[in-house]
Image 1 (cartoon, protein in one colour):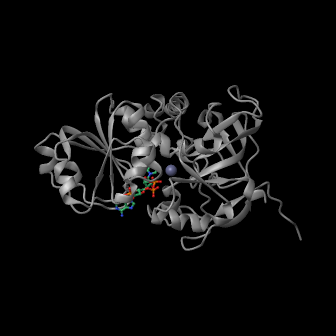
Image 2 (image 1 turned 60 degrees about the horizontal axis):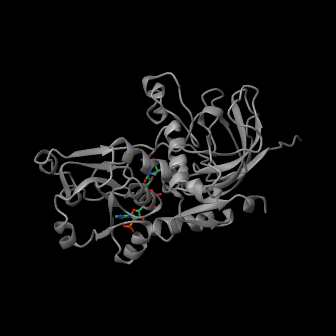
Image 3 (image 1 turned 30 degrees about the vertical axis):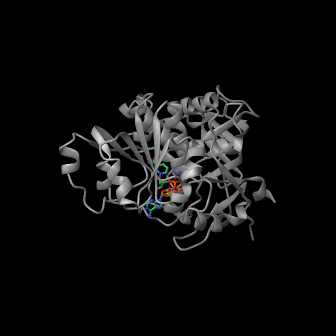
Length: 354
Ligand code: NDP
Ligand code: ZN
C-alpha cells in the first residue's frame, strides 16, 4: 500500500451542499517565475460564498476559496527579481492571464481576452490543475501577480484590500471621482465600507444607502457625510437628481430604478455586487431622459492594485475586520449572509496549524 503525502492543507467544499472542511493537497514547486508564499491572513469575501454555493454556475469542486491573501515569501524561482524570501506580499483574485492581449497590455488583466486565471477554481495555464485559494497554509503564484504590502499597513486589516479594496477603488478612479463629487455607496458590507473610505479620501461628498437605520452612526464613523435609508421611499425621493456616481455593492437582485432616479443627468450607476440578470426590469426612461449611464466593473488590474495599496498606506486606509479561527468558517459564511460582521472576516492562518 502506498501512502500519498501532501505538502499543503486548506479548507474546501467538496460539493455545492457540503460545508468547508480540511483538505490536504499538493502545491506545485515554484517555477522559475513563481513566488511561494506562507499565507498569514485571508479575507472572507461574499464571492467566496457565491462560489461555494455555485451561484454563478462556474464553480469547480473542490472549491478552496480565498482571494484576499497576505503572507510572507518563503521561496522564489530563479527568474524572480521583485521579491525575496521574507517579504510581506499580497495576492488578490487573479494568479495569471495571457499577458499578451490588448487588455493585458493595458494592465487590465481582469479583462484578459482569454479570461484571467482566478486564484481559485480556474485551470492553471501550464499544468491544467485547478487553482486553490488562500484558505490554506501556502500558495504559489507567478511573480507578475504578486503585490507588495506597504510597511505601515497592518497585514491582517490589509488583506481585504486585495479584493474589497481594489473592487471599489478601481471604478472610482476609472470614472474620475474628484473633490466635491457626490458619490453614493449602496450597501455597507465588506465592499461598501471600503467604498466609503476611498470616495472620502478622493475628496467626494459621500452618502451611504443602507437598508438599516442602525448603520447610520457607523457609516458616519467610516467617513460618510450623509445616510439614506433605502427602504424609506420619502428619503429616496428627496434625493432625486442629486448624485454624480453610485457604487452599487448589493449582492442580490434589487430594483435599480429608484436609485437611478437619484442620479443627476450624466450620472453613472456602477454595478459591482450584482452578477446576474437585473430584476425587476430597468425602465430605460430613467437612462434616456437624463443621459445616465449604467456600468459594471470587475476588480482591478495588478498595477492598479499596487497603486491602491500605496494610496491606502498614504491615507491610512485599511479594512475593519473581525479575526476568524478557520474552524469557524462555516458559521462565518452564515454571518456574512446575515450581514452580521463589521465588515470583513479575516482568517488568522495560525489557527489552521493549531
Ligand atoms: P457583504 O455581504 O459584505 O455586503 C453586502 C451589503 O449589501 C450588505 O452589507 C448590505 O448592506 C447590502 N445587502 C445585502 N443584502 C441585501 C439585500 N437583500 N437588499 C439590499 N441590500 C442588501 O458583501 P461583499 O461586500 O463582500 O460583496 C458584495 C458583492 O460584491 C458580492 O455579490 C460579491 O460577490 C461582489 N463582488 C464583486 C466583485 C467585482 O469585481 N465586481 C469583487 C468582489 C465582490 P446594508 O445592510 O447596508 O443594506
Ligand atoms: Zn472578493
